[in-house]
Image 1 (spheres, one colour):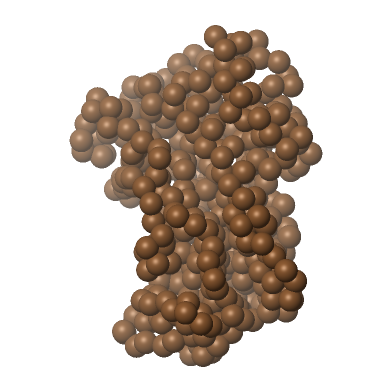
Image 2 (cartoon, helix red, strand yellow):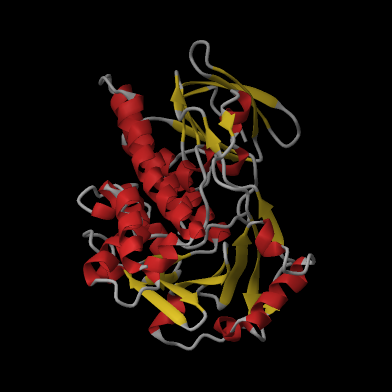
Length: 405
């Protein structure tokens, strides 16, 4: 694919963060070029969206393209622990926001976004790898296609939306270890899920299976289902090392998986380990990081795509102001803003694995107001400072857990 030698903004990665960035820049009248190492569609996890994603897709004018795919509508999250059930309905949340979103096979979802952006005239070069970047002056990024042919593109700015590829963090030595304990996920897609047809069938199911371990069940509109377990070494020490046997043993071990007893695996189970990551900084002269190129916490609350879209939105709108000649402060306008939402999710992730949050979630006597506030966090509205579980997230989670003990 012939690419221009220069553009206003070079976007690395065509996933949700990259496509959203390119869409917003194109709407504002700036030229963007997207380079993507892989060929789409391609498999990736992170298949359960949060309602706040709808706001962000709408602003990028990508909502209609996704709606046309007829993905299964997700109206809440169901937590299960033995005989205990805790249902969070997005229509009953504290923050005024969307009451639904979608469960999406990511190969289809990501390709839908990229195709919509490409249809607007934004060039997307698949199977092009970034091999060097120079920010000593005007940003210059060298890319190589599948045959090894190299090209350098000069731009006014670079947005790294490379996800787990983490292109600029590697090239610029920005990576730092995550503060979260190492965990891994073993997962597959299933065929033959016997859904009961009730309102809970379209929820994401989050099932606790051991201290520090949990399972996701995510239904798709084509009848297939995503199924996986997440945990630390202590969780997997009690399961077969063979990944097929690991998941089969799980399904047979808990009545909450009865609907999956007669399913077949669509592909051999896959493993992702040590997925939590972080970086020294989110921006620098001529570049910024968005999506999983910045920081990835944990899949338990499906925050990945929400944070990817929010960071792309915030970074792109900050950049648009800068390109227009306005004074911007990336530390305040972007990095500090993103840190507030990430810190809320981090508090919930840590409280989940420590056992504090399950005490609240499975407490049948919890007040409606507390459940609504927690529901808004689960819906992705982690920048709503009017919600005490956002504004004072650490204190409120600890305080309510003590009251519920």
